[in-house]
Length: 342
Image 1 (cartoon, rainbow, N blue to C red):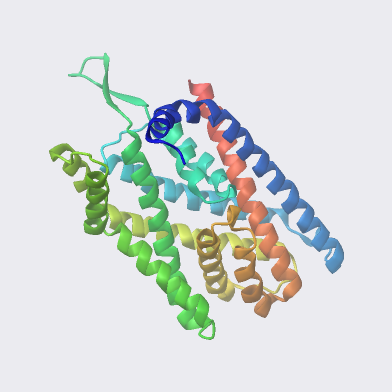
Image 2: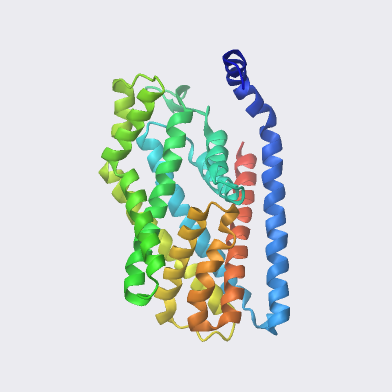
C-alpha cells in the first residue's frame, strides 16, 4: 500500500508526467483513428462484395452532401459550446475553439470518452485574449482561459447534446416504434439525467458542492461566472442542438439516398432522424470507442425493417465512415487555415 509521503510526491509530479506523456497520448489517438478508418473502410468493402451490392450505384454527390450536413450540425454544437465559454467568462478566440472542438471529436474513438474533454481543454487553456484599450490601437491582455470553466463548458455542451437528442428520440419513438419499449425507456432515462444535470440551478449547485468538497472558496467572482450559465443560454443551446440533430438525420437520409435503389422518400426522414438520435445516444452511453457496435445495434434493425438488411448494414457502416471522414477533413482544414493566418 502506498504511504502518504509517496502519494503526495506522485500528486505533485502528476502535471509534469501528464505534460511529458501528452504527445504520446496524441500519437495513440492518431493511430486509433487511422486504424478505425482502415477497419471501417475494409468492413464496408467486404459487405459490398458479400452482399452482391453494386458499388457503382453509389451516388457520391449524395454522400458529399451528407458530409456537409454533418459538418453543419457539428458547427451548431460548436456555436453553443463557444457561447457557454463566454457565459463562464472565458473569451477564447473563435478559431481556436473551432479547431479544438472538431479535433476533440476524434477523442470519441478512445475508450471512456474522457479524451474528448482532455483534448478540448488542453488546446485552449492558458490562451490569453486581448482587447483594444480606450480607442487606442494598442492591445492589452484581457484574460487567460482557465481549465475549470473549460472542463465545465465541455460537460454542459455534451450533456445538452445528449438531452436534446434523447428527448427527440423519445418523441419520435412514441409515433413510429411503440413496440421498442427498451429503447424508449433508455432514451427517457438519458433525457431525465442529462436534462436535470444541465438545468442552471442544478448545475450551479453541483459545481459549488464540488468546489467546497475540494476546499475551494466560491466567492463573488465564482458565483458571477456560474450566473452566466442561465436559462437564456440553455434555451439557445436547445434550439441550435435541435437543428443540429435534424441535420444529422438529414445526413443519414442523404447516405441512404446515395445507395441507389433503396426506394427512400421524403416521408422516410422522420425514420432516419429517429435512428440517428437513438443510435448516437446509445453509442455514447455504451462508452465504447466511437460507440462501435452500439450504434449499429440500434441502426440496423430500425433501418432494416424499411430498407432491408443489406442496405441497413451498408448505411450503418457508411454513415460512420462519412462522419469520421468529415471530422478528419474539417479538423485538417481548420488547422491549416489557423496556421496560415498565424
